[in-house]
Length: 136
Image 1 (cartoon, one colour):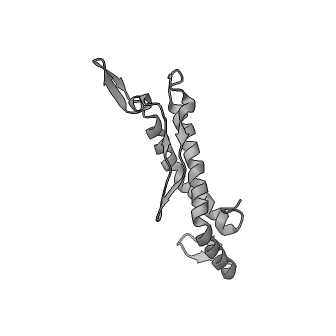
Image 2 (cartoon, helix red, strand yellow):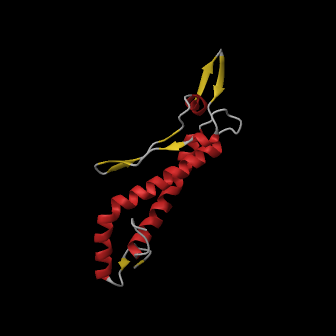
Image 3 (cartoon, one colour):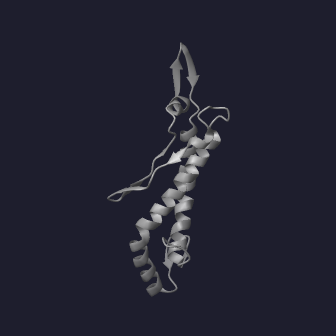
């Protein structure tokens, strides 16, 4: 399959493409669940990179929940179970002073959002070319 500059698509084998699209329709939820779980793990690791090394709550505390599906929407939670993590993330006013937020998860999310289109494109390309899929 080739795409020209003007957006027209040239398909070498239309029957194979039609079959791959039908397979993609069936495998899409499992593929997206797998990709989303992988990305959530990367997000937790990126948040850990932004976590101050001497923080008592530990960089290793970042967790991911299971992938949840509701209709056409899929989500996964990335969190730190220590209640102090929210104060460290957003900042706080304790004892008359102000602690500036570190935005560990927010910084990681902005990086992930920039990388997401390429990640999704690679997953789709692998699926359409027959080199990947939900079952690999």
